[in-house]
Length: 212
Ligand SMILES: C[S@@+](CC[C@H](N)C(=O)[O-])C[C@H]1O[C@@H](n2cnc3c(N)ncnc32)[C@H](O)[C@@H]1O
Image (cartoon, rainbow, N blue to C red; front, side, top):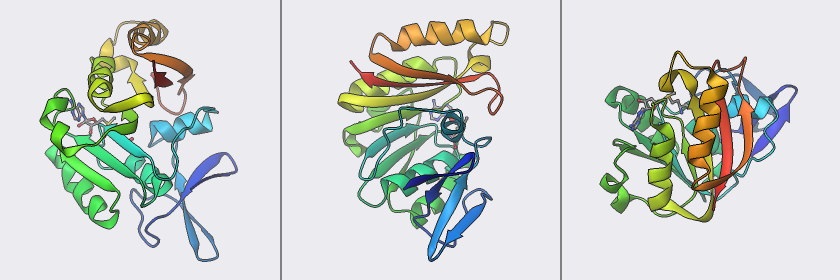
């Protein structure tokens, strides 16, 4: 469950008593709400910056590319609850060392140690997803999400991507990069929303769309 508390958002913890990344906790009776730090999560930043299209709901199946140690994944895990699942792909074994204990606490996270450029490697492990989320900070981030969406996304499924301009070209104007990436993504998705995450996340834009 997701709720607004002042400027910030918080998710109702699926595992009360456990912090994931040192986040602030708000207690309401027996409930614990984990405050979503918008400087540690691009999805948290997009919410604070007024994101209107937020499709993530209880029971959703999500393919998450670039899970890292699970900061954003943990909030999505609170929202989809036990009826949903997050297939969390990450290729760094260092990050996996933190992601695996998180998945032991939260049964709706399925960690996958693999390269998101090679979806055929994990195709047998994953069912069709309602949403593909991508935060890999790579020059080919748009191609990576499209390759995965082609294999795993349900018809009319959702996509969310954080575009890091500096991973694509440090010299180019970020706005020019966002427009080029939007054009690429538009071949497969109807882009419904684009948010500049400045100043919470420098040189990042966030896109939400639906499979055409
Ligand atoms: C910006 S961090 C992700 C932060 C995370 N999404 C969050 O909000 O908690 C990018 C992550 O993508 C991972 N990554 C980059 N390229 C990848 C690839 N080809 N396959 C899988 N993971 C990748 C990196 O190892 C890194 O952990």
